[in-house]
Figure 1: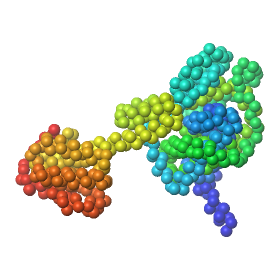
Figure 2: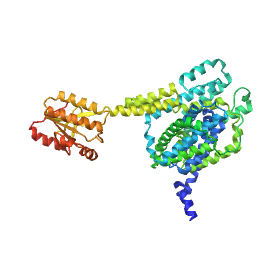
Figure 3: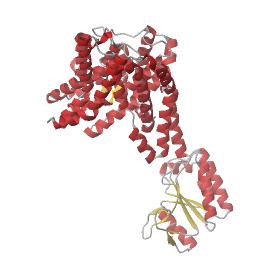
Figure 4: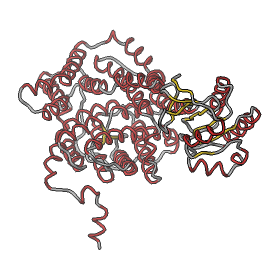
Amino acid sequence: MAEIRATYLLPKWLKSYRRQWLPGDATAALIATMMLVPQALAYGTLAGLPPHIGLYAGLFPLIGYALFGTSSVLSVGPVAVLALMTASAVSPIAPPGTDAYVEGTILLAALSGVFLLAMGLLRLGALSNLLSHPVINGFVSGAATLIILGQVGPLLGVESSGNTLVQLISVTISDLETINPFTATVGVTAVAMLICARLGLARLARRLGLNESGAKLLARVAPMLVLLLAITLAYFLHWDEHLEVVGSIPAGLPKLGLPAINWGLTYQLLLPALIIALLGFAESLSVAHAIAQRRGERLDPNAELFGLGAANLASAFSGAFAVTGSFARTAINDEGGAHTPLSGVMAALLMVLVLLFLTGLFEQLPLCVLAATIIVTAANLIDVKGFVHNWRYDHADGSAMAGTFLGVLMFGVEAGIGLGIALSFATLVWRSSRPHIAVVGRVSGTEHFRNVLRHTVETRPQILFLRIDESLFFSNISAVEDRLLSELKRHPDIRHLVLILSSVNRIDGTALERLFQVNRDLKSRNICLHLSEVKGPVLDRLSRSKLLGQLTGRIFLSTYIAELALRQDTQQEPQAGQT
């Protein structure tokens, strides 16, 4: 019985694990760890914490996600955007580097984990749709821009502080006189090397005979190679005498446990924690979905909430900050041949070895090289093509993305994401308040009705067919009425108005009242109001009102049946043409 219970508690992927998957998972874990170590150090610094705390964020969260997550390759751990959001949320409460600041970042991760678990228990996986992709892309692009600007100071050896575009630029410019030429040279050289590796290393490797997959992997682990080169040069050439290095990194595993509960601090961090939870979930799920669709796998959004919640709680218990899925490391897992979350568990075990035996290796790492790593990584997050695409496809989406981007730059990450959420809802309301309404006619020789502005169709002077392509509710019913009045002026001879409701899924109370008024106004003009193609649920609700009893016309199963019946009433010959 005990064995059965133990088996029941095992993750699904572990119950069906195959031995032939082990080499792929092990290879992916090794390569992902080579990428995770420099990123973890960099993102720890970005979060306003000692760099080694970033390593803690890449340890137990991997195991926490593996227990509950459903993605076979998602790599959970520290990411640039959440590191920046952590710094933005906690820095107004306590100065970076202090015990109070560390306590705040840990509590923020714990609260984010609690929110994610609570949403998982309530099965709120659909919350990933709360933010549209243009808004998420705008936020990430804005945050990445702030990250780059914030790292220009460390890259050049000058002070850099602030949470907005204006603050960062003004502080950096005012301190340019104190620039450290040696630091700037090393930092800019590291940026150039990383950019060249990103743009041309894979191509060079292919020319030298490496296969496509191997070339991509080499390009992705290039940051680790650059860091190792910088560490080697710093050690033998004593660079620590001329520039700042990481310094002492405590060896050993993190101490487990949460700080004492501070209710005042908890209250201050509730909203930032909720925002981090929602954004981290939406971003992580989009990354996991992209890989899952290509692999033919299915994700459970509610299980993903549990996985990310467990990962954030594990990060908090190990003294680290909020985490989520990383696009770059997930791509590494995929290309490295990972088959299951065991690759994440193995990466965590490799991180244990790093913390136990290799921390001394990174003590000579120049901070300007860490800044270079952050800058090049963040630059890849700025989605210029996405903005151009969204603007061309839909100006509303493009405006929402641009507004969120500018909001993050001008007002900071928290205000920016709040503006993004507001723009998401504003875009939704704006679209639904301006429903598409088409005058339609019948395509000759068929039973199909199409827009008179797009097709050659038959119409009748005394019958007007209007198709409403949106549910009717309080914010758009006035626009519908205005369109009806304008069409009545354009068609003074009509005696029958048919509203085609095939796209109407709901009619709220306000819209119902206005339909009563429309029916009365048309009756005073000797015009009959008819409905066609009314959906069952909508018809059920209408039957509970008095509208159907007072309707001057009829309800037709299809628009074609309506035309046949009304044509007999009017005995009109059709008019063919395209308006």
